Image (tube, rainbow, N blue to C red; front, top):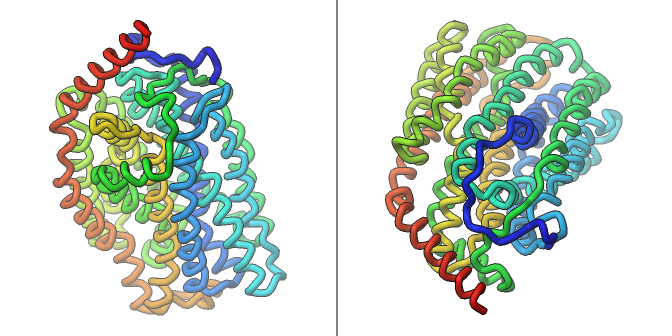
Length: 465
């Protein structure tokens, strides 16, 4: 490990410099846009590549079996990494691979037969999700605690820093549907459309690697060799990470369904209004300025639970909205704003889980814990994109009618309405019930105090030796 990376207790520093905060936050903005583009894969494959919706959904679901292996392997690899530039930082270069594979999905030749199209899409999607995004999910928390090593900085990076990726994704949601209406009429148009975002997002996503260096080693078991059995022990004894993962899974399932395109086509009758709806959601952005103050008075998990109730209310409004844009706008603001705590603060819960592992005398394993949450992220995204095609197919959605611009049958229309409203509401309600079993926040003061005492004792003994 580089001599600049040193063992140290949390230090008292000033706030995170603005440029450093921006550089750190642009990478999740870049990957967020990539994931949103992957959410349009079903639309591209069905309408442009003329592939059956149910088959496309099955392919995306099948790729999740690959994820099941690569996520935990990636977490283990990150936790064992020791290089001159750090433990988590080297894996930031996977941003390049993520965007290359994302563009590759839309380069699938339309002239190929169905089998070749399936193979190509499966491979590219697996590369994007199972390899590159896997390492980018696994390294984030590992990188952060070694680059900043200050709990107050963690909150700033997760809240104020969370504004940047949120704004980036909102801008994408405004611009992409508008451009899609005029450009995504052929495969070449889709490729050009994706490249418009891929090039700048790759460059911006790499800023973190060049600007933010790892400076600290906070591993309580530094020097001890990590084995597979140690990872298994942690995952068997830390139930809280699975509760966090469930919330992440549901949020990404809902976000990545891409049902909005179908809803605004069949129910509203104007896909271009999706951009206007995304613009309205920016009303929720100021919430990020309030979160740090709220977190001084309550715990992260309580904020997330309240946010989930707000999301449920927003989705119920969506069901009754129909084509009423003002009602849809209210539902969108509630749904987007309520989901902010889950998307922005889950990293803080992962750090708490790592502290809990150390408290129990286990390896912290920020990488493996992040990999579990990342796995849930991708499972949710894959299920959302995959189940959309499957459920639409079961409800009688006809690709031929879509190509001809004709209305779908009542069964397909009702399924689109349910996927846009009551089904997400029901899923979030299950998450709300499960998160009431999360009790780690009540013992965290004792956990942190004990860990700090043990670290100070270990440091003193090392100095004497």
